Length: 242
Image 1 (cartoon, one colour):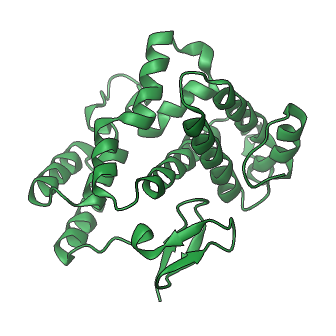
Image 2 (cartoon, one colour; image 1 turned 45 degrees about the vertical axis):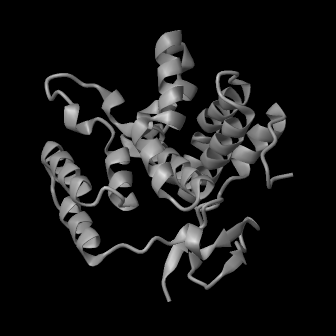
Image 3 (spheres, helix red, strand yellow; image 1 turned 180 degrees about the horizontal axis):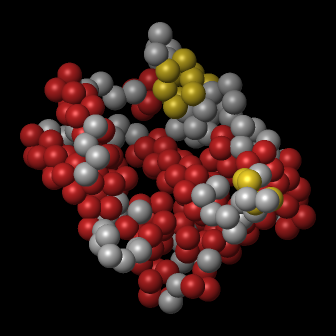
């Protein structure tokens, strides 16, 4: 029996036939929404793409794969998360080529001019490659939740856990065991900024806040007491938690 990811909370579930309730968040999960069958050729192409280290070559390979299988959601999804890595300049440090960097607009809003901030937010929810994926999926809501979860997971891993500004060091050693406490402040700050953002719809606010919270929960191994304390203090309410 295989496993798949709950589109609502991101927890791994065992494959079952028909509709079922996620035991973690209570969301309804339908098999046809969660599992996409792909021909062996597509799976083989994705395996090959995963082994390509040169990002530009990987991008071209995936474009060719997409030409061959224009209705393949997994191929379209890989291109979506590749972001603009293929366009990076080795002579200049530019984190914006990384797809999940878009969420930096909620961590450091003062660093983004209004026009660029608007552009980032539009790309989070309406990038052409995302719209293509949504057109290919049997459940747009499930895919959007899964996409936002992955985006938030990668952001936490790269730009919070990977930044010594937040993950303070003692005598040169990282304090990974303290990550749930150290990262509670920046994540609660991001959640508050999303909550206050009038440029996105209330539905988009709820989806993104839920994705960030669930991603933090998963990344911290369920240790969310510090984050919950910050949210309670700020009066930030999220679906599914008190």
